[in-house]
Length: 476
Image 1 (cartoon, rainbow, N blue to C red):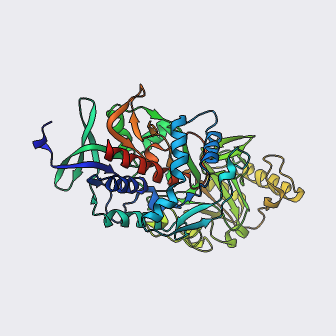
Image 2: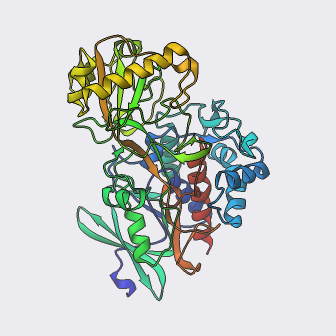
Image 3: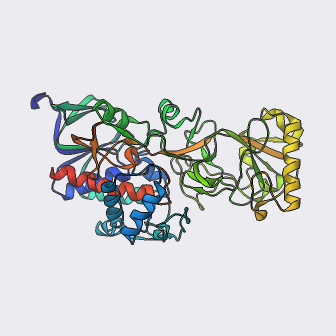
Protein backbone atom coordinates (compact mmCIF):
# COMPACT_ATOMS: atom_id res chain seq x y z
CA UNK A 1 0.00 0.00 0.00
CA UNK A 2 1.32 3.43 -0.87
CA UNK A 3 1.13 6.30 1.55
CA UNK A 4 -1.11 8.20 -0.86
CA UNK A 5 -3.95 5.78 -0.04
CA UNK A 6 -4.03 6.56 3.66
CA UNK A 7 -6.79 8.88 4.87
CA UNK A 8 -4.98 9.66 8.15
CA UNK A 9 -1.46 9.06 9.39
CA UNK A 10 -0.43 8.97 13.04
CA UNK A 11 2.11 7.26 15.25
CA UNK A 12 -0.08 5.05 17.45
CA UNK A 13 -3.68 4.00 16.98
CA UNK A 14 -5.57 2.79 20.06
CA UNK A 15 -8.72 0.82 19.32
CA UNK A 16 -11.15 1.17 22.22
CA UNK A 17 -11.88 4.04 24.61
CA UNK A 18 -12.18 2.09 27.87
CA UNK A 19 -9.74 1.85 30.74
CA UNK A 20 -6.98 0.01 28.87
CA UNK A 21 -7.41 2.20 25.80
CA UNK A 22 -7.19 5.41 27.80
CA UNK A 23 -4.10 4.18 29.66
CA UNK A 24 -2.44 3.17 26.38
CA UNK A 25 -3.23 6.47 24.70
CA UNK A 26 -1.97 8.53 27.64
CA UNK A 27 1.24 6.49 27.93
CA UNK A 28 1.93 6.70 24.20
CA UNK A 29 1.26 10.43 24.11
CA UNK A 30 3.45 11.06 27.15
CA UNK A 31 6.23 9.08 25.44
CA UNK A 32 6.15 11.53 22.55
CA UNK A 33 3.81 9.83 20.08
CA UNK A 34 0.93 11.28 18.15
CA UNK A 35 -2.11 9.19 19.08
CA UNK A 36 -5.55 8.52 17.64
CA UNK A 37 -8.29 6.59 19.50
CA UNK A 38 -10.98 4.77 17.51
CA UNK A 39 -14.14 3.91 19.47
CA UNK A 40 -17.10 2.00 18.04
CA UNK A 41 -19.76 3.48 20.38
CA UNK A 42 -21.06 7.01 20.60
CA UNK A 43 -20.50 9.33 23.56
CA UNK A 44 -23.47 8.02 25.53
CA UNK A 45 -22.23 4.42 25.43
CA UNK A 46 -18.43 4.64 25.13
CA UNK A 47 -16.13 3.51 27.91
CA UNK A 48 -16.28 -0.26 27.62
CA UNK A 49 -16.43 -2.45 30.70
CA UNK A 50 -14.52 0.14 32.72
CA UNK A 51 -17.40 2.60 32.59
CA UNK A 52 -19.97 0.18 34.00
CA UNK A 53 -17.76 -1.91 36.29
CA UNK A 54 -16.76 -1.44 39.90
CA UNK A 55 -13.82 0.51 38.42
CA UNK A 56 -11.46 -0.25 41.31
CA UNK A 57 -7.99 -1.78 41.35
CA UNK A 58 -6.38 -3.86 44.05
CA UNK A 59 -3.98 -2.13 46.40
CA UNK A 60 -0.73 -3.84 45.45
CA UNK A 61 1.87 -2.65 47.93
CA UNK A 62 4.13 -5.69 47.59
CA UNK A 63 4.96 -6.78 44.02
CA UNK A 64 6.81 -9.88 45.19
CA UNK A 65 3.79 -11.19 47.12
CA UNK A 66 1.50 -10.16 44.27
CA UNK A 67 3.53 -12.34 41.92
CA UNK A 68 3.23 -15.25 44.35
CA UNK A 69 -0.53 -14.75 44.52
CA UNK A 70 -0.90 -14.64 40.73
CA UNK A 71 1.05 -17.89 40.42
CA UNK A 72 -1.22 -19.47 43.03
CA UNK A 73 -4.35 -18.24 41.28
CA UNK A 74 -3.05 -19.60 37.98
CA UNK A 75 -2.22 -23.06 39.36
CA UNK A 76 -2.36 -25.65 36.59
CA UNK A 77 -2.58 -22.96 33.91
CA UNK A 78 0.63 -21.00 34.50
CA UNK A 79 1.15 -17.52 33.11
CA UNK A 80 4.63 -16.95 31.56
CA UNK A 81 7.05 -15.66 34.16
CA UNK A 82 8.01 -12.46 32.30
CA UNK A 83 4.31 -11.56 32.16
CA UNK A 84 3.89 -12.34 35.88
CA UNK A 85 6.82 -10.11 36.80
CA UNK A 86 5.65 -7.21 34.63
CA UNK A 87 2.10 -7.56 35.94
CA UNK A 88 3.30 -7.51 39.56
CA UNK A 89 5.55 -4.50 39.02
CA UNK A 90 3.13 -2.42 36.97
CA UNK A 91 -0.02 -3.07 39.00
CA UNK A 92 1.90 -1.74 42.01
CA UNK A 93 2.37 1.53 40.10
CA UNK A 94 -1.28 2.10 39.22
CA UNK A 95 -2.20 4.39 42.10
CA UNK A 96 0.86 6.61 41.76
CA UNK A 97 0.31 6.82 38.02
CA UNK A 98 -3.27 7.95 38.57
CA UNK A 99 -2.13 10.57 41.06
CA UNK A 100 0.45 11.71 38.53
CA UNK A 101 -2.44 12.46 36.17
CA UNK A 102 -3.90 14.73 38.84
CA UNK A 103 -6.64 12.26 39.74
CA UNK A 104 -7.62 11.82 43.39
CA UNK A 105 -7.64 8.19 44.49
CA UNK A 106 -8.31 6.45 47.79
CA UNK A 107 -9.41 3.27 49.47
CA UNK A 108 -12.89 2.39 48.21
CA UNK A 109 -13.41 -1.01 49.82
CA UNK A 110 -11.22 -2.65 52.52
CA UNK A 111 -11.82 -5.99 50.80
CA UNK A 112 -10.24 -9.19 52.14
CA UNK A 113 -8.85 -11.74 49.66
CA UNK A 114 -11.39 -13.87 47.87
CA UNK A 115 -9.00 -16.84 47.94
CA UNK A 116 -7.55 -16.60 51.46
CA UNK A 117 -6.19 -20.14 51.42
CA UNK A 118 -3.83 -19.43 48.50
CA UNK A 119 -0.23 -18.38 49.01
CA UNK A 120 0.26 -14.67 48.40
CA UNK A 121 -3.31 -13.70 49.30
CA UNK A 122 -1.93 -11.47 52.06
CA UNK A 123 -1.18 -8.91 49.33
CA UNK A 124 -4.90 -8.09 49.22
CA UNK A 125 -5.46 -5.03 51.41
CA UNK A 126 -8.43 -3.53 49.63
CA UNK A 127 -9.61 -1.89 46.44
CA UNK A 128 -8.62 1.60 45.34
CA UNK A 129 -10.96 3.88 43.40
CA UNK A 130 -11.17 7.39 42.07
CA UNK A 131 -12.12 9.65 45.00
CA UNK A 132 -12.25 6.49 47.10
CA UNK A 133 -15.47 5.40 45.38
CA UNK A 134 -16.42 2.12 43.71
CA UNK A 135 -18.50 2.25 40.52
CA UNK A 136 -20.47 5.17 39.21
CA UNK A 137 -18.26 5.55 36.14
CA UNK A 138 -15.76 7.73 37.98
CA UNK A 139 -12.63 5.96 36.73
CA UNK A 140 -13.56 6.18 33.08
CA UNK A 141 -14.63 9.82 33.40
CA UNK A 142 -11.29 10.68 35.01
CA UNK A 143 -9.23 8.82 32.39
CA UNK A 144 -11.27 10.24 29.51
CA UNK A 145 -10.65 13.68 30.97
CA UNK A 146 -6.91 13.03 31.04
CA UNK A 147 -7.04 11.90 27.40
CA UNK A 148 -8.85 15.04 26.29
CA UNK A 149 -6.61 17.29 28.38
CA UNK A 150 -3.71 16.07 26.25
CA UNK A 151 -5.47 16.88 23.02
CA UNK A 152 -5.53 13.25 21.95
CA UNK A 153 -7.98 12.81 19.09
CA UNK A 154 -10.90 10.46 19.81
CA UNK A 155 -13.12 9.35 16.95
CA UNK A 156 -16.43 8.08 18.31
CA UNK A 157 -18.79 5.92 16.28
CA UNK A 158 -15.84 4.55 14.31
CA UNK A 159 -15.70 0.77 14.74
CA UNK A 160 -12.47 -0.83 13.58
CA UNK A 161 -12.97 -3.52 10.95
CA UNK A 162 -9.63 -4.80 9.69
CA UNK A 163 -5.91 -4.53 10.30
CA UNK A 164 -3.65 -3.71 7.38
CA UNK A 165 -0.36 -5.58 7.11
CA UNK A 166 2.72 -5.18 4.97
CA UNK A 167 5.49 -7.77 4.96
CA UNK A 168 4.04 -9.34 8.11
CA UNK A 169 3.91 -6.10 10.09
CA UNK A 170 0.71 -4.32 11.11
CA UNK A 171 0.92 -0.90 9.52
CA UNK A 172 -2.62 0.42 9.66
CA UNK A 173 -6.29 -0.17 10.25
CA UNK A 174 -9.63 0.30 8.51
CA UNK A 175 -12.53 1.75 10.48
CA UNK A 176 -16.14 2.33 9.47
CA UNK A 177 -17.51 5.85 9.75
CA UNK A 178 -20.62 7.69 8.64
CA UNK A 179 -18.62 8.90 5.64
CA UNK A 180 -17.39 5.44 4.66
CA UNK A 181 -14.23 3.44 5.29
CA UNK A 182 -11.42 5.29 7.04
CA UNK A 183 -7.89 3.99 6.38
CA UNK A 184 -5.45 4.99 9.11
CA UNK A 185 -1.72 4.51 8.99
CA UNK A 186 -0.01 3.76 12.32
CA UNK A 187 3.69 4.47 11.95
CA UNK A 188 4.67 2.88 15.28
CA UNK A 189 1.91 0.50 16.34
CA UNK A 190 -1.71 -0.35 16.98
CA UNK A 191 -3.03 -1.18 20.45
CA UNK A 192 -6.15 -3.34 20.53
CA UNK A 193 -8.17 -2.45 23.64
CA UNK A 194 -11.54 -3.56 22.31
CA UNK A 195 -12.73 -5.53 25.34
CA UNK A 196 -13.89 -9.12 25.56
CA UNK A 197 -16.23 -11.22 23.46
CA UNK A 198 -19.09 -11.66 25.92
CA UNK A 199 -21.45 -9.85 23.56
CA UNK A 200 -20.80 -12.27 20.70
CA UNK A 201 -23.13 -15.28 21.13
CA UNK A 202 -21.23 -17.47 18.66
CA UNK A 203 -17.87 -16.91 20.35
CA UNK A 204 -19.46 -17.40 23.77
CA UNK A 205 -20.89 -20.75 22.71
CA UNK A 206 -17.64 -21.86 21.05
CA UNK A 207 -15.19 -20.81 23.75
CA UNK A 208 -17.17 -20.55 26.99
CA UNK A 209 -19.77 -23.25 26.42
CA UNK A 210 -22.69 -21.04 27.42
CA UNK A 211 -25.69 -21.57 25.14
CA UNK A 212 -27.78 -18.56 26.10
CA UNK A 213 -25.98 -16.16 28.43
CA UNK A 214 -27.13 -12.76 29.63
CA UNK A 215 -24.52 -9.99 29.34
CA UNK A 216 -23.95 -7.77 32.39
CA UNK A 217 -21.63 -5.14 30.94
CA UNK A 218 -21.15 -3.35 27.66
CA UNK A 219 -22.81 -4.81 24.55
CA UNK A 220 -19.86 -3.43 22.57
CA UNK A 221 -17.66 -6.35 23.68
CA UNK A 222 -18.30 -8.48 20.61
CA UNK A 223 -14.82 -9.84 19.95
CA UNK A 224 -13.93 -7.33 17.22
CA UNK A 225 -10.29 -7.14 18.26
CA UNK A 226 -10.09 -10.90 18.62
CA UNK A 227 -11.16 -11.47 15.04
CA UNK A 228 -8.86 -8.79 13.65
CA UNK A 229 -5.91 -10.17 15.59
CA UNK A 230 -6.61 -13.74 14.50
CA UNK A 231 -6.78 -12.68 10.86
CA UNK A 232 -3.40 -10.99 11.37
CA UNK A 233 -1.95 -14.30 12.62
CA UNK A 234 -2.37 -14.08 16.41
CA UNK A 235 -2.27 -17.05 18.74
CA UNK A 236 -4.84 -17.20 21.57
CA UNK A 237 -4.64 -17.86 25.29
CA UNK A 238 -7.08 -18.90 28.07
CA UNK A 239 -10.17 -18.45 25.90
CA UNK A 240 -12.30 -20.57 28.27
CA UNK A 241 -11.88 -18.23 31.25
CA UNK A 242 -14.65 -15.85 32.29
CA UNK A 243 -16.66 -14.36 35.12
CA UNK A 244 -20.33 -15.19 35.55
CA UNK A 245 -22.94 -14.38 38.19
CA UNK A 246 -26.51 -15.43 38.95
CA UNK A 247 -28.66 -13.06 36.96
CA UNK A 248 -31.96 -12.20 35.38
CA UNK A 249 -32.80 -11.35 31.77
CA UNK A 250 -35.19 -8.41 31.42
CA UNK A 251 -37.19 -8.03 28.20
CA UNK A 252 -36.49 -4.72 26.53
CA UNK A 253 -33.13 -4.20 28.21
CA UNK A 254 -29.76 -4.77 26.57
CA UNK A 255 -28.07 -6.30 29.60
CA UNK A 256 -29.18 -8.35 32.58
CA UNK A 257 -29.32 -7.76 36.32
CA UNK A 258 -27.19 -9.32 39.06
CA UNK A 259 -29.56 -11.07 41.48
CA UNK A 260 -27.41 -10.88 44.59
CA UNK A 261 -30.19 -11.07 47.21
CA UNK A 262 -28.32 -8.65 49.49
CA UNK A 263 -31.10 -8.44 52.09
CA UNK A 264 -32.20 -12.05 52.67
CA UNK A 265 -30.94 -15.62 52.24
CA UNK A 266 -34.32 -17.29 51.74
CA UNK A 267 -33.85 -18.51 48.18
CA UNK A 268 -32.94 -21.70 46.29
CA UNK A 269 -31.11 -22.48 43.05
CA UNK A 270 -33.02 -25.12 41.11
CA UNK A 271 -32.10 -27.29 38.15
CA UNK A 272 -34.53 -28.10 35.39
CA UNK A 273 -35.71 -31.13 37.36
CA UNK A 274 -36.93 -28.94 40.22
CA UNK A 275 -34.14 -30.07 42.54
CA UNK A 276 -31.52 -27.93 44.26
CA UNK A 277 -28.36 -27.87 42.20
CA UNK A 278 -25.74 -26.39 44.55
CA UNK A 279 -24.98 -24.44 47.72
CA UNK A 280 -26.79 -21.21 47.00
CA UNK A 281 -24.55 -19.16 49.28
CA UNK A 282 -21.18 -20.36 48.01
CA UNK A 283 -18.66 -17.50 47.96
CA UNK A 284 -18.06 -16.21 44.43
CA UNK A 285 -14.49 -15.13 43.79
CA UNK A 286 -14.89 -13.05 40.61
CA UNK A 287 -15.81 -16.03 38.51
CA UNK A 288 -14.74 -19.03 40.57
CA UNK A 289 -16.27 -20.67 43.63
CA UNK A 290 -14.81 -23.30 45.94
CA UNK A 291 -16.88 -26.42 45.27
CA UNK A 292 -15.90 -29.90 46.51
CA UNK A 293 -12.48 -28.59 47.53
CA UNK A 294 -11.48 -27.03 44.20
CA UNK A 295 -12.03 -23.67 42.56
CA UNK A 296 -14.49 -24.00 39.68
CA UNK A 297 -16.15 -21.62 37.28
CA UNK A 298 -19.62 -20.84 38.66
CA UNK A 299 -22.38 -20.54 37.60
CA UNK A 300 -22.14 -22.21 34.20
CA UNK A 301 -25.59 -23.76 33.84
CA UNK A 302 -29.05 -22.20 33.46
CA UNK A 303 -31.18 -22.53 36.58
CA UNK A 304 -34.27 -21.13 38.26
CA UNK A 305 -34.15 -19.10 41.46
CA UNK A 306 -36.99 -19.54 43.92
CA UNK A 307 -37.92 -17.38 46.91
CA UNK A 308 -40.89 -16.61 49.11
CA UNK A 309 -42.86 -13.59 50.30
CA UNK A 310 -40.62 -12.95 53.30
CA UNK A 311 -37.60 -12.65 51.02
CA UNK A 312 -39.51 -10.43 48.61
CA UNK A 313 -40.41 -8.03 51.39
CA UNK A 314 -36.90 -7.96 52.82
CA UNK A 315 -35.59 -5.73 50.04
CA UNK A 316 -34.60 -5.65 46.38
CA UNK A 317 -33.03 -8.85 45.07
CA UNK A 318 -30.86 -6.68 42.78
CA UNK A 319 -28.54 -4.19 44.53
CA UNK A 320 -29.47 -0.60 43.76
CA UNK A 321 -27.11 2.05 42.49
CA UNK A 322 -26.76 3.32 46.05
CA UNK A 323 -25.20 -0.03 46.99
CA UNK A 324 -23.50 -1.28 43.81
CA UNK A 325 -23.31 1.36 41.07
CA UNK A 326 -22.31 -1.02 38.31
CA UNK A 327 -23.74 -2.76 35.21
CA UNK A 328 -24.97 -1.55 31.85
CA UNK A 329 -28.65 -1.75 32.76
CA UNK A 330 -28.20 0.56 35.73
CA UNK A 331 -25.42 2.90 34.64
CA UNK A 332 -26.25 3.38 30.96
CA UNK A 333 -29.89 2.39 30.58
CA UNK A 334 -30.72 3.98 33.93
CA UNK A 335 -32.91 1.27 35.43
CA UNK A 336 -33.58 1.42 39.17
CA UNK A 337 -34.85 -1.82 40.69
CA UNK A 338 -37.93 -1.40 42.88
CA UNK A 339 -37.32 -1.56 46.65
CA UNK A 340 -39.74 -4.46 47.22
CA UNK A 341 -39.43 -6.19 43.80
CA UNK A 342 -43.11 -5.52 43.13
CA UNK A 343 -42.58 -3.58 39.90
CA UNK A 344 -40.54 -6.37 38.34
CA UNK A 345 -43.06 -8.99 39.44
CA UNK A 346 -45.77 -6.88 37.86
CA UNK A 347 -43.78 -6.73 34.61
CA UNK A 348 -43.70 -10.53 34.52
CA UNK A 349 -39.92 -10.72 34.92
CA UNK A 350 -40.54 -12.83 38.03
CA UNK A 351 -43.29 -15.46 38.18
CA UNK A 352 -45.69 -15.46 41.14
CA UNK A 353 -48.15 -18.04 42.53
CA UNK A 354 -49.97 -18.67 45.77
CA UNK A 355 -48.69 -22.24 46.05
CA UNK A 356 -45.64 -24.16 44.91
CA UNK A 357 -47.91 -26.49 42.93
CA UNK A 358 -49.28 -23.50 41.01
CA UNK A 359 -45.83 -21.99 40.50
CA UNK A 360 -44.23 -25.16 39.12
CA UNK A 361 -45.87 -25.20 35.66
CA UNK A 362 -45.12 -21.50 35.22
CA UNK A 363 -41.42 -22.35 35.29
CA UNK A 364 -41.65 -25.70 33.54
CA UNK A 365 -41.23 -27.94 36.58
CA UNK A 366 -43.07 -30.90 38.05
CA UNK A 367 -45.23 -29.74 41.00
CA UNK A 368 -44.44 -32.79 43.11
CA UNK A 369 -40.69 -32.40 42.61
CA UNK A 370 -40.79 -28.72 43.52
CA UNK A 371 -42.88 -29.31 46.64
CA UNK A 372 -40.58 -32.12 47.73
CA UNK A 373 -37.47 -29.98 47.19
CA UNK A 374 -38.80 -27.14 49.33
CA UNK A 375 -40.02 -29.56 52.02
CA UNK A 376 -36.59 -31.19 52.26
CA UNK A 377 -34.87 -27.80 52.38
CA UNK A 378 -37.22 -26.52 55.09
CA UNK A 379 -36.55 -29.67 57.11
CA UNK A 380 -32.81 -28.95 56.80
CA UNK A 381 -33.47 -25.42 58.07
CA UNK A 382 -35.35 -26.79 61.08
CA UNK A 383 -32.51 -29.21 61.81
CA UNK A 384 -29.84 -26.55 61.36
CA UNK A 385 -27.89 -28.73 58.93
CA UNK A 386 -27.85 -28.99 55.13
CA UNK A 387 -26.78 -32.55 54.25
CA UNK A 388 -27.22 -32.00 50.52
CA UNK A 389 -24.95 -29.02 49.92
CA UNK A 390 -23.58 -27.84 53.25
CA UNK A 391 -25.04 -24.35 53.51
CA UNK A 392 -23.91 -22.70 56.71
CA UNK A 393 -26.58 -22.94 59.44
CA UNK A 394 -26.87 -19.15 59.61
CA UNK A 395 -27.95 -19.08 55.97
CA UNK A 396 -30.64 -21.76 56.30
CA UNK A 397 -33.71 -19.58 56.02
CA UNK A 398 -36.89 -21.58 55.34
CA UNK A 399 -39.29 -20.81 52.49
CA UNK A 400 -42.65 -20.95 54.21
CA UNK A 401 -44.53 -17.75 53.47
CA UNK A 402 -46.78 -17.61 50.42
CA UNK A 403 -46.94 -16.40 47.73
CA UNK A 404 -43.88 -17.89 46.06
CA UNK A 405 -41.73 -16.44 43.31
CA UNK A 406 -39.27 -17.75 40.71
CA UNK A 407 -37.41 -16.62 37.61
CA UNK A 408 -35.15 -18.17 35.00
CA UNK A 409 -31.49 -17.38 35.59
CA UNK A 410 -29.09 -17.94 32.75
CA UNK A 411 -25.45 -17.30 33.74
CA UNK A 412 -24.95 -13.54 33.81
CA UNK A 413 -21.74 -13.08 31.83
CA UNK A 414 -19.76 -10.18 33.26
CA UNK A 415 -16.78 -10.56 30.95
CA UNK A 416 -14.54 -12.98 29.09
CA UNK A 417 -10.82 -13.18 29.82
CA UNK A 418 -9.06 -14.78 26.88
CA UNK A 419 -7.84 -13.40 23.61
CA UNK A 420 -4.70 -12.78 21.57
CA UNK A 421 -1.66 -14.17 23.32
CA UNK A 422 0.71 -11.37 24.35
CA UNK A 423 4.09 -11.04 25.98
CA UNK A 424 5.36 -8.90 28.84
CA UNK A 425 5.54 -5.90 26.50
CA UNK A 426 1.89 -6.40 25.48
CA UNK A 427 3.01 -7.42 21.98
CA UNK A 428 0.63 -9.85 20.29
CA UNK A 429 2.28 -13.18 19.51
CA UNK A 430 1.80 -15.59 16.64
CA UNK A 431 1.38 -19.37 17.17
CA UNK A 432 5.16 -19.80 17.16
CA UNK A 433 5.73 -17.28 19.94
CA UNK A 434 7.04 -14.48 17.74
CA UNK A 435 5.68 -10.93 18.11
CA UNK A 436 3.55 -9.64 15.25
CA UNK A 437 5.32 -6.35 14.50
CA UNK A 438 3.22 -3.31 15.25
CA UNK A 439 0.41 -5.09 17.12
CA UNK A 440 -0.37 -4.82 20.85
CA UNK A 441 -3.25 -5.83 23.13
CA UNK A 442 -4.39 -4.72 26.60
CA UNK A 443 -7.45 -5.03 28.79
CA UNK A 444 -10.18 -7.63 28.57
CA UNK A 445 -9.31 -8.50 25.00
CA UNK A 446 -6.28 -10.31 26.41
CA UNK A 447 -6.27 -10.29 30.19
CA UNK A 448 -3.42 -11.82 32.15
CA UNK A 449 -5.65 -14.21 34.07
CA UNK A 450 -5.62 -17.83 33.00
CA UNK A 451 -7.75 -19.10 35.88
CA UNK A 452 -8.81 -17.40 39.13
CA UNK A 453 -8.76 -13.64 39.68
CA UNK A 454 -9.47 -11.55 42.74
CA UNK A 455 -11.39 -8.30 43.11
CA UNK A 456 -9.84 -5.27 41.44
CA UNK A 457 -7.62 -7.46 39.27
CA UNK A 458 -9.18 -6.66 35.90
CA UNK A 459 -8.95 -2.89 36.20
CA UNK A 460 -5.42 -3.24 37.60
CA UNK A 461 -4.44 -5.36 34.60
CA UNK A 462 -6.06 -2.97 32.12
CA UNK A 463 -4.27 0.07 33.53
CA UNK A 464 -0.94 -1.73 33.84
CA UNK A 465 -0.75 -3.33 30.42
CA UNK A 466 -2.47 -0.39 28.76
CA UNK A 467 0.48 1.71 29.89
CA UNK A 468 2.96 -0.97 28.86
CA UNK A 469 1.41 -1.30 25.40
CA UNK A 470 1.19 2.43 24.77
CA UNK A 471 4.73 3.18 25.92
CA UNK A 472 6.25 0.28 23.98
CA UNK A 473 4.35 1.13 20.81
CA UNK A 474 5.40 4.78 21.05
CA UNK A 475 9.12 4.04 21.42
CA UNK A 476 9.52 1.04 19.11
